[in-house]
Image (cartoon, rainbow, N blue to C red; front, top):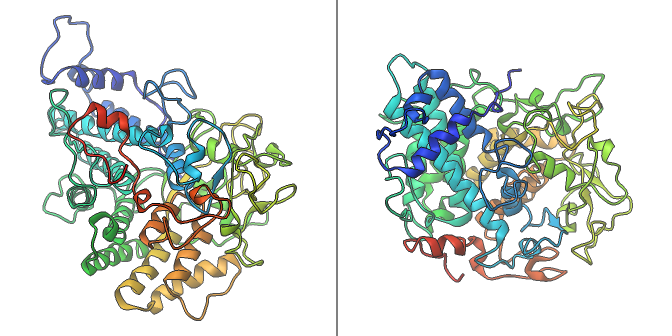
Length: 539
């Protein structure tokens, strides 16, 4: 298994981006010939490759040295502002799948769906996503300016940068709506304040993400920059299937993003899901004699790179060279507390923060092998948010190998080797069945066979009648803590009202909240700094 090396981060990038932030004309030559400029640094195809790795690395680490001390975003805690940690806070903590008990500033408000326009933890993801867009924009800008005909791999690198930009923009669209600042490689640098894409719900950013992704998979006339085919890419490297997944997600959620339903988008989702399901991926179902964990658990272990037949796209971590207090270190360490022994999960410490609610636990049959809880000393009912023992602990992710061994840290530190499974085949199977229901009112025989594979692995039965309610619950059972839940609940119209869970609305039993929470606010700091931006409704 080849693992994409995202860990070598050149100082060159900081120099290139520093210049880009300070001058409008990147062809300006400084008076001091000793100053590094883009044309001096990006003087080979290898140099462009190293800069591309920084864009990938921006999804895994949050600074130049790690785990702390030289942050990408000045003024933010490096751990809290790491991309996947900040995304997990926004996608999981406001749902029935996770509760956080730390009294860190306004973090408790996230689990209560009671945040304001200046919530610091929402703000951290907003700026991280925009930062990733900026990295990709600058890479593409420089590639257009300094690329040479002999750099035969550069068009592919540009396609990957465009994918990473589209991924960050899709996350921003999903969380903050269509009104986020919209900039591309063609936008002026530093001379004007960015304009928003448009109103909170609207087509501008949606259409842009769609057009970018269609181009880099070769489905438009602009096919000069195309991603690698499935089977040609390394683990953690964007390929066509990763882009197909984002396109399918975009189309499946179109009624949320655009404010109206158009069945043509479900048909488009089906098209790209069919490409994924016929691309050679398969569910992990096999075991070896030495395996300690089940095939399902293999997807979330320190050697889950061995599960790349199911994992379509991942954010990669290595306990030696990609150390961060965010990412999978956060996901695992924050889920360990109470009577749990950290070493059993491949960690030196537990942070005692995140656990789950009875609303998720009660969705599982007793025989379901995906119900991965630690219950000793834990109570199912949450009577106090700040008590880790209130709510079952989740042990889905472990920094242990499939045979029960340790990763690179030998269990003596908190730096993990577990890759984030951003997209995997089981998700595509469930999406295909949902599209069938939304288009045709029933699930096709092919999709039923996909669902049968999922439940067979879990050790449970497929119901006689598969409807949308079952799909939503099954997505929770199969995909919990994989950062899909908030998006799913919004799409099904059950995030703010019609379905409640502990702590929602700052109520122990849960209650409906204002529909404004279907969108997160544009941070007050950005609204103040950029008068072109318009706050999302009712914030």
